[in-house]
Length: 133
Image (cartoon, rainbow, N blue to C red; front, side, top):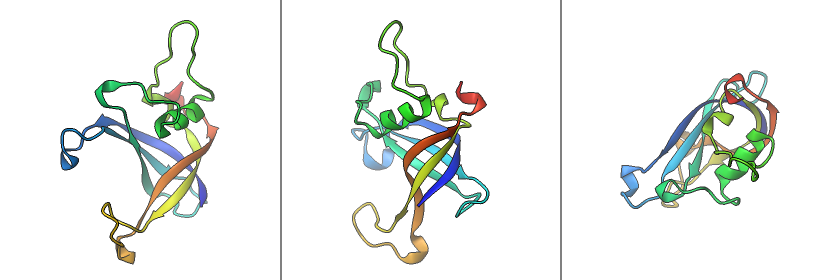
């Protein structure tokens, strides 16, 4: 299901103690579904696996693909290299694809009351936020 949502917060990458100190850092973008849409007002998240040791994400990385949509193009190659700053997401309105999570981390089926929605993919940028300029 595709709806419009605004990015309200971006949690920088950090290693989860739950998965051990050798796990990949994970960043989270929090989105609020806009009024007039299915699940309006609900706050959902999108998780991004990031490279270890503050490395630059590859072009195939989910964060890099979504950042290019939020930036309205890839990072500059000539001149000073453009950082993939998280602020590009903040306040911007996107068309996002939602996914219902029906299985737990270990593959076990979740009971219907424990199932939840997440932002699976950013489809397009609708409007750029003031904070993202």
